[in-house]
Image (tube, rainbow, N blue to C red; front, side, top):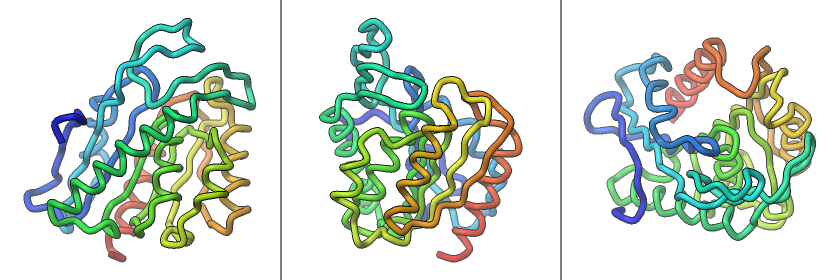
Length: 224
């Protein structure tokens, strides 16, 4: 996995569950590393958190400035995004390689969660819903689905019942609540039943959201 840079945090040794968590535009894998102890997970099962770093690339909507990005955003409006679809698919390949790495280390796909914030959440959505093997769940935070046709065309039978924790800030002026609800509508249209949470916050995370993610994860882990 030398070609993919990531951080690793284990709740206790010998994990049997993995969470692969993608950061937002311009951040890196360190962004959500501090969240692990705040989730208040039980000692068993042990969980390995993987926090990958997106590659550096120019981002058109930011004047071509080079930053960590999962894909290029060509233009943005309150309720739409024009993106580089090839870049999104390349990031899906990164996530698939990370999943394969965890399965090679002994954690089957059915015990692997995907999580992501903002642009990272878009990658988590696509990667999970089109993955050919069952995954344990998705945590999608302050995010959207930029290429809906990829999901409607490639939705994997293995993940048609995948648990989803979806959350958004009601005061988000970066990824509008409308974009978040567009994603929610798409999920409903393909037969998925996401758990939706709204918080009075901007484009961020808040303590109540972290507590709710922890509760959701504890429930899912107990069911594995």
